[in-house]
Image 1 (tube, rainbow, N blue to C red):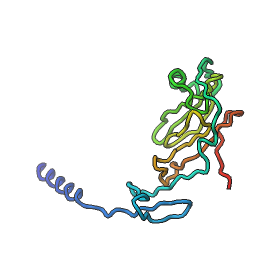
Image 2: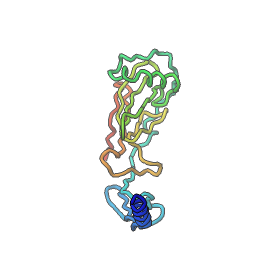
Image 3: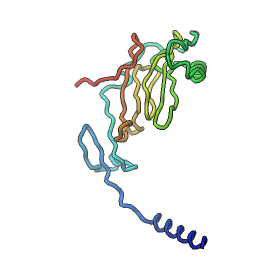
Length: 186
């Protein structure tokens, strides 16, 4: 009886695996309007609805003048209410990294569950720790820029059309040490 059930399962699986689904239509959404992909350049391999990320600003619009890799200041874990929960992660990043964000900051991030990443920044000049945005799909940032992209698009500039996938641009306000969501000017 066990052999008959095993053979039946193998037959069902082999027939179901051989079934070829018709590929779904690829839709690109550019500047709010949709169109059907016309050429290989517009074809998206995974066939999901994707949106092209086309910001009007770039990292070069928020360049800093100097890069300072010092870490002479003692880390001030009392400067941020969450810092004491991540002492090892922050200390390790501070010791091993050079400035990786906005000239003299260490941008430190870690996973906090499925589709969740938390982060903090360390001012390498003062040792103070500041809040930074939470992400679902990671971050993009550079040592020479104050701009931060939360949930950056893929290498081709596309992102999935889902509630937590949209890329967001933040800019660090150097005076207040707060990340401000960038609003594009019309």
